[in-house]
Image (tube, rainbow, N blue to C red; front, side, top):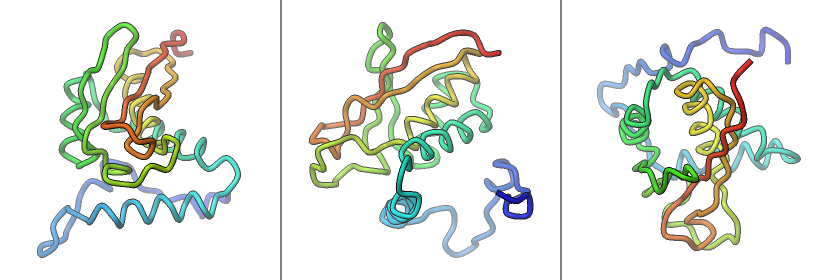
Length: 155
């Protein structure tokens, strides 16, 4: 990608919104259409690309704790984040922006959200992590759930 193709904009700058009438909110179907379009456009390896994009985002939002993550997810409308278990570490997202209410597609689809969780946790723990979605509304489950594997210290 050429440098001229990259936006010179920080996540902090993107957080500032000047929409006096419409405010900060956008319809969930718009977010889903955007992600579906990206997946269809990227084709091969799109899930991995969304995961790493989410990870980059999660690393740069400045959360310092799981409680910060919970607040961030709720504030942006990503979903309601909670701890499902500590050992192994599993995080649950209810009312997921990506898939709550979708029909059963037979597989988990929350690649970006898994990446956001990974990026946030790497920042909090200062360790490499891998996050795998093990439950998803789009797989017929009643929530999304993500299992976290702590790999090692960051280099």
